[in-house]
Every structure is written in C-alpha cells, then in structure tokens.
Image (cartoon, rainbow over all chains, first blue to last red; front, side):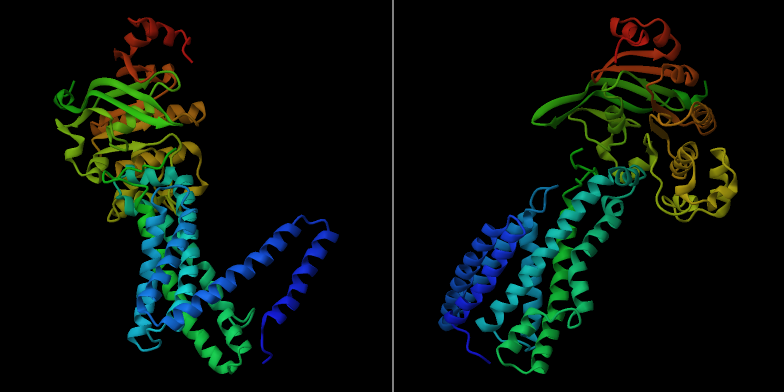
Length: 253
Length: 245
C-alpha cells in the first residue's frame, strides 16, 4: 500500500483540475462548483480527521455520544427540509434517526459485534445516520405528496366510517417502502455493481478482501435494520400529522 | 306523511366555519340554523362559492364547525365516535372514488361480511344487474360509478345520505337516472337526503325542501317550488334570475 500524505492529495487535485478543464471545454457551467467543492471537501474532511483524532485519543464515552448527537441533529435538519407538506419534520426525523441508531448500535454492542470505542461507534453511527436521514427524507416526501394528491381516496374512506389509519394505510406503506428502496437496491447489487465504501476503504488500507467482506456484510445488515426502523417511525409519525383526533383529514387544500 | 317524517335527524344551530387561506380568514359558512327531518329530501342550492359543500362537510364531521353546533338525533356530533357517525351520515362526493379492484370489492369495503345475496340486492337497489359485481371498478361509466358509490354507502345502512353535486359530471340521461334513484331510496328506505346542486331544475325534479345559501349564509328556505318561483328576498330573486354567478 502506498502511503497517502498531503503530497498524494495535491497530486490528486490534478483530477479535479481535469474535471474543470473538461467542463470548460464543453461549456457546462459547473467549473466554479467543482473548484468550490474541491476546496470545501478537503477542508471539511481534514477538519473531521482532526476532530476524530481528538475524540479517539480522548477515550471519552460522552464525547462520542456528543458527536453522535450532533450528527443526528444535522441529519434531522436535512431530512426535515423534505417535510414540505407538514409541520414537525425535524422532531420526527430526530426521533426516527435516534431510534435507528440506538437500536442497531445497541444490538451490535449487546451481541459483542462492536465495542464501546469511538473507532467503532462513530463511523458506524455515521453510516446509520446518513442512511436513516435519506430514508426519512424520502418517506416524508412520498407520504406528503401521496396523501395530498389522493385526498379524494382518503376522504372517501373517512366518509365511509374508516379510521385515519385505515384511510391512509396504503399510502403509508408505499411511503415506507419508498424510504427503503435505496437500501433494498443496495442489498441486491452490493459487490456486483460496485464495492461499497467501507469495504473499499478497508481494502485500500491493506485489509484482506475476505476480512473486508465480512465487515461489509455486518454493515449491510446493520443498515437494513436501521433504515427499516427509521422509515417506519418517520412514516408513522408523519402520517399522523395529516389527521386530527376527530378522524379529519387536515392537510391544506 | 309517514310518522317517521316527524323526527329531526340532523339539526344545525348557528353553525359557521372559518378557514385560513393565503394568510387571510375566509368565512365559508356563517350562522346557518336548520332542522333536517327523517325521510325528507333537501336541496342545497346557491351560486359558486356559496358554501354548499363546506356546509355539507360539517354534517358528518368531515370538517369541524368554527362556531355553533350540529346535532344528530338531538346530541352533538362530537358525542358520537366519528367513525360510527359517518356510517350513519354517509357522504358521496362529486366524482365518486372507487377503490382499485372489482365492484364487489367496493361493496365489501365497508362490511366485509356481506353475503353474495346482499351484494346482489345492493346492486339491484341502485338499478344495476347482479353480474355487475364482477366488473372492474376502473371500467365502468360515470353514472355507473355514482350508482356503485351509492350502493357502497347503502351497505352501511345509513340514516342520512349527503350528496355533493352527484350529477355534476354526468350527461343529462345519467343525471336523471341518479335523480330517480335518490327519490326512490328516500322513499323506500326512509333516508334523509341532502343534496348539493347547482341546477335549479334538478332541485325542482327532486322536490322536497330547498335551502338557498349565498356567501355562506342561509338566505331562504322552504318548499322547493316556492323558493324557486316566488322567493321572498332580493338575493333569492337574483338567484332564480341567474344574476348570481
């Protein structure tokens, strides 16, 4: 394995420059974005690197929890932007992502798959949170647009004496499934279409492919569990926002 | 008049509804008081935006009044579980929604334990042949959809049928079929029927009582023929002269 230092990173900048040149030649107006993204990703990742070095060396459990908490807050804020059709998206995303993290990490800790060390918790929590964030965001988007565009179907069911849960059930199921589509597709194609990031990283860092594969399998199982939990909670809580205690559909017309 | 026609089924007392739209408050219904008797037919008429549909939605608690109250057999609607209330005060919309599947699936939607004979009798009651049950709900005409929707509502054995412009998107022949069906059901099943219509001729054919709403307010009410020929108010005159849009 070649040692990767700042010299190698500087050399790799050539690839970003190549992208800028190609964009310029083809008049695709993204040069500024590529340049900005190149600098930004470098600064962000280096900052994260230093932060992780600090957290890992401090060996403080509470610092690890604080880091995970901040990651969930930022993730929940991002997911809430997709809750265009109802209020309280942040709280719902926060609850769904926290539950997904606690359950999956808790099970992995209880089964002794990982230890309560920052080098396990933080990268895995990062994967759980980013995947739960996407799942919650897609669920939010789908439930809102489906319920609003199917107002007549929902109100017909209510008018026939059905509960809000019965009236919205198929839209809830579709939304939860939509939230899970990405991870389901990932599970189908993993290793065939692309090697996942965690596995690629391990192989690049010198681990044996078989060892990397086993870790990746654990990660995949962890993610399907986390995404299922996050989508179900996000869907359950979001759909409730469209109805009141009198079984009335309260979405704005 | 049969004895059952003396019973008040639904009653509104100074009922009103305000909604907030685009930052402003709109009063869709304002201070409407009225008593609806068993087995009677009521036409809700008025120009566009008069609050007819908004008023109708308050009667089975699909929407909540902002003021006043609605009583069902003398008790406030809120004292009944909404799901039970809506089985007795059933509402049909302008464009009936049929759930994906066969006509039979729609007729079983409310009460899954209906026997084939009961399904058959529901279809016959709305003037459709028994083999209609096997048709795909997607493949039937507008008039047939409306009749299936009525049959589906009847499967709940309601006391009141609320119809929101049920013939608005139908051709004249299908419209008159629905009108005859509404009259027949009111008579045979002692159903209280409250129908929103924008068509005074339809109200005349249905008879019963007519309530004229304008800008959410009850302007006139009484026997349909009287309201539509010799209204007492200026707005009533304007309505029958088609001066209200």
